[in-house]
Amino acid sequence: MATPPVSGVHTPVRIIRMQELIGTIGLSKSTIYNRMDPRSKWYDKNFPLAIKLGKSAIGWRSSDIEMWILTLSQSVEG
Image (tube, rainbow, N blue to C red; front, side, top):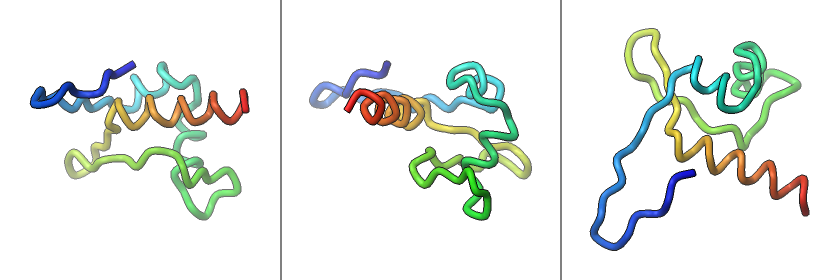
């Protein structure tokens, strides 16, 4: 889990790609794309936005994924 930056200290942004995302959150590639697609019945408006890295490459900020996981665990607990 990423720690918040201490005053004046910059935390580098870490981008993860699809395979690492699959391993981190335990969802399949098609489920991830469904969570991202507003036309899908499984769309999740809270799912982190992908970042376009190139013509056909996307990634996600690891801190965004960690925050999304936290919100899921809080909704289950609360």
